[in-house]
Length: 331
Image (cartoon, rainbow, N blue to C red):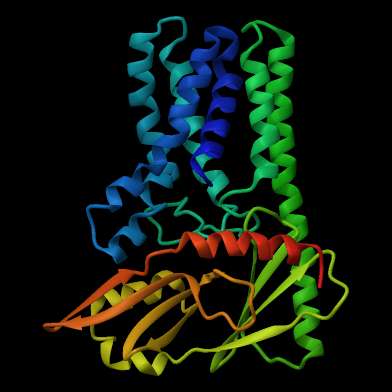
């Protein structure tokens, strides 16, 4: 999830553990603990594109990381703030670190929660930014932090924030299940034979859902809003994997295909090849669009394959927001 959301979650957990003893110090250090796992983004800047993708939400988002870091940081905090014990501070840090990847498990990218095992947990039920998850949570946290540390009202407000946000996550899973059934029924009605079906929420909400459908030669992509009254329309995108057969000798391309678990297409523009990651969809809901959120330019230079991520256009994001609002209201 986005940084603000992780700060709010970490702060609320900190308040739950030590708010009554140390007041807003618990909120502050909980917020800090809740942001630490995302330092992998900074570290990724020192690596090539593919390695940075592998690092992202890897070790720093694992149970192992939380277990290792909690006693160390807890000890340091206990030396600075002696109102609470080393065990108390360690518990605060552990839960701040642990709940960060736990929340990220609900997103499309997921996390290597059980690192070092190569298993990425991704429920794909919430977008990385969702105001309906974050804003009520934030309001409750701010209101709680303004109360005295021993106040019953403070604890109650913080708990309400945790209850509301957790309930929204459960609702996202229910909404995903409902949308999944709709996509399955639509594929059956249209006689589309497929091997895999994956669904994900569209940006900023859990009302509009997208589906990726894998067939032998192409992927189908479709959208469904809970307010739809018309049948789901699927668009086909040819895999064109044969275009990179001569490049599969390069280890970094093999790693990139493994990262996507086979959910990718190859496109060609002006004699240049592009690797499109389908897991995060397109930057437009226009049926004619072929511009994906994550696309990588493949360039063979001096017996080396250079893989670079295509830059994103802010204008595309603005246009998508307008399209989303229109599409959420139904077809």
